[in-house]
Length: 487
Image (cartoon, rainbow, N blue to C red; front, side, top):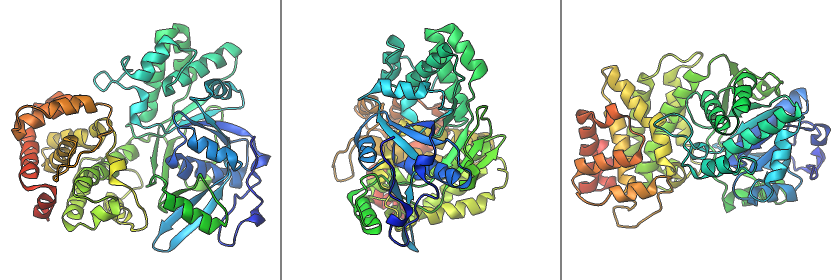
């Protein structure tokens, strides 16, 4: 281990220290994807679990990209602060659940050694949708994905998340070590089943017996996670230093709300995450679908429309009467595509979303949410549109949201300022924006270039006509004027 958080008495009054001595417990979890969300969510639930029930469940957190956060944590003994912000003010707590932080690009072998360690019983994942190498058409692995292609050629020297999992499992099987449980926390429907399919598919390409062992021995529970967590800014770090009385280069801020729904399938044990409020259920799917369609779908609408209207943060977009009205309508329409969700009143959930989005103390950037749009469209907007049409309902709210995405995909504001799409298919999208400027033709080209539109939807002339009509109004009148027209 690389040090330890200062003692509880070292923190100012009002700052909550870990409710245990971190050095008392050893790691039992490797987390792939050392970003702000992990530090505001899974690591906090684990912190609560350790305080309530103890156990060797601390986390080895791995960055698959930049080493900056791993280095910041290492320099300060792996503690960091979570700042919760709302109308009541800002309150800090110190989190001690991370025992070590590694940079995979700098030392991939160290990551593999940790993953193969018999003490590690769970691997959790928050690496964003595009990192998995999913082929949307087949539902399996995309061999053309950069990391997947590399790892299939060099399975013993992986760079991608699926490659790391398969090589670590191979090493464990070879050593006679029981497998770890793989817990995906990214925004996919039935994410456990999806990751199982990708891991098994990769393994079958390199070792058929390994693939069979994974299928029979490795657990892949699904989960749904929710907490609005902006990317940390210099202001975040300044606030942390003010609250803590010392610098914290790994500080993160988030809203008060937090939710984690988990399929209870952990053959080698798990932390007492319920101590932090996690809900263990037999079937996560209804909760996943609710969050993807109501929260994430509305977030995408806010991101594209808000960014184009010059609104830097979600809170700014929600102050726009026309957009806020549209967001509320989108949330209610998304709810109508859902079956009942156990223990959840969808109307109240929608009301809570409107309040959470409007939180004036959370600076969640629209440009951040807009990233990787083609990876997010299917589960957030396209499938809900399909389901609404199948139920005989009006799917115009989804057509409007898709039109805003298409307008965003043009890569320029109404004033002509350009921006990077930050999308894995940005080259295809850029190529699709040339040629005939007719909104109908443009919409059809962008739908094809996205590579994720279901055929039944892209060939639904009535629905695509609605998309084209909305896009035409945005192009003719500008996004800001179009938003005013919706109120």
